[in-house]
Length: 262
Image 1 (cartoon, rainbow, N blue to C red):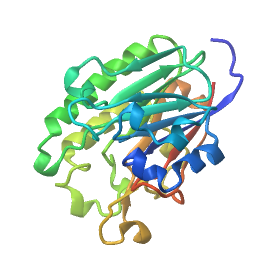
Image 2 (cartoon, rainbow, N blue to C red):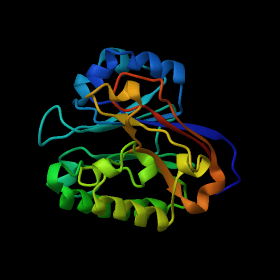
Image 3 (cartoon, helix red, strand yellow):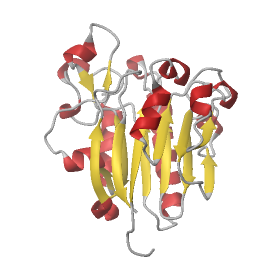
Image 4 (tube, rainbow, N blue to C red):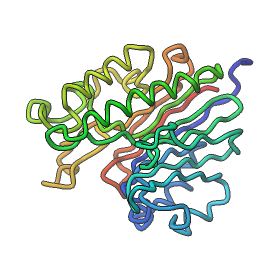
């Protein structure tokens, strides 16, 4: 690849239902924030059900990947100012692709992946499924990385990897999102050559991206950091900035951004 020429703003956001989020101003945020790429998770709608004020945003190319196993469930999407060279829908495994959990877009100088990792569920009821998804994702990232382009994996990982990443780690050691198996996977994943971009620029800072709807958790900032943009370690020098937009509402998650030199 030739030398770095530009900075792209990539934002990832679990919207917890795009139709509900649209009623809280999603279209307005998309216009005013004006990111180059928006990665969405938990869209919970087919393409024809995308609210009109979002579907009509002419400055974004829109690609949606809905669940087929159950309507109004899971689902991912990518909005981009540039037209992708190619869009990859799904990991190639029906058990994951039927839930619309991952979509990727390749551009001239970089690749983005929007991923909605499974929730391990109460008592670890779906931990095996989640770990299979994690393994499949690693394999997919390896294939995409063969292009030589930076690959940004953004999305809701449904895991807080370290005690600093949630408000009450001791109280949650047996709860989904903080089970030993999923934390161990993410720790190994990051150590295998991937950078948690926000933490890379903010070591030791306590900030969250998701709050329970119960007990006024968001107002009290009793949250979890489970939404990430990660990039391969060899592209660490491409990370220009990263943020979590805690003031943006409309979902129980907030947007997480990455400015990447491409």
